[in-house]
Image 1 (tube, rainbow, N blue to C red):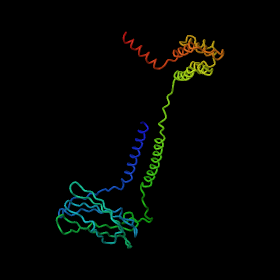
Image 2: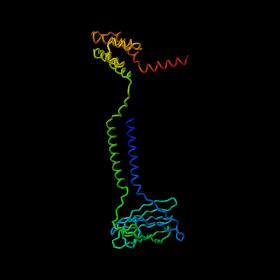
Image 3: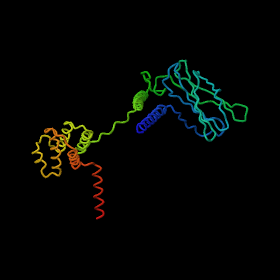
Image 4: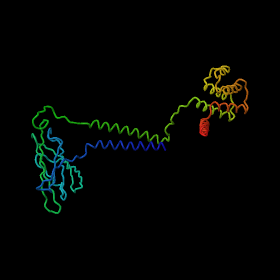
Length: 327
C-alpha cells in the first residue's frame, strides 16, 4: 500500500511539473489583446482594427515580417478574412494564422497574423491593406482600410535619426536558459520515472527504519535467540558460552573472575542472579556438566528478573498506578 501511494504521488508530481513547465514555455506565446478604444460614432458597425509588428526598424531586404492585425468584430457583423488585400511595397509570403475568441456581448476578437516580404531597395517601406465586412441581413459588403504601417531599413535604433554603424544583433532573451531548463527537467523526470518503475516492478518496499536499541533490549534479544536453541535440544557448550558472554557484556564484566564479579556487584540488586547464571554456565563449560530442567529454569527465571519483558514492565506499572489511585 505504501509503495503504491509513493508511486501515485510521484506520478502526480511529474504531471504537475510537466504542466507547469509547458505552461511557462508557452506563456510568452499567448495572445495579448490591445485596447481597441471607443466605437466610432459615425459608423458603429465597422470593425475596429489595430496593426502591430515586432519592430519598425532594422529590417533587411527579403526579411519575412509577421504583421499582427487585431480585429474586433462588432455584434451583428461578420468580417470576411478572405478579402484581405495588400498594397504598397510588400507581398504576402505565406498562409495567415488566425485565432478567434468570442465575447459575451456578441462581439468577436480576431488575431490575423500574416507574413509579408519586401524586395525593393528603399529607406522605408509602406504597408497598406483593405478588408471587407458585412452587416447581417444586408447584401452589400462594406470596405475598411486597415491602419497603415511604415517600416524602416536603415540600421538606426528608432529608424529615424541616431545612426548605428554596427550591424543589428539578434536579441535572444531568456530562450537559451528556458530551453536548457526544460531539457534538464525532462532528463530529471525521466530518471525519476525509471527509478519509480523499477522500484514498483521489483516488489521491494522501502527499507525498514533503523531503531537504536538499549543494551538491555539487545541483551534480551540475543538471550532469547540462544535460549530458543537450548529449548530445542541444542545443548552445545557454545550456547552456554554465548549466555555467559551476554551477561558479562550487559554488566561490563568481560574480563572479571568470579570473585571479582561478586565484588563488582556488591549490593547490586541482581548480584545473586548474575552469579547463579555464570556459575551454572561454568559447570557446563569447565566441568562438562549437563544441566537438568530445574537448573535451566533457574537460568530463565534469573534472567527474567534481571531483564524483564517490556510488556511485563508496562503491566506492572499500570497495576502500581491503579493501586495508588485506590488508596
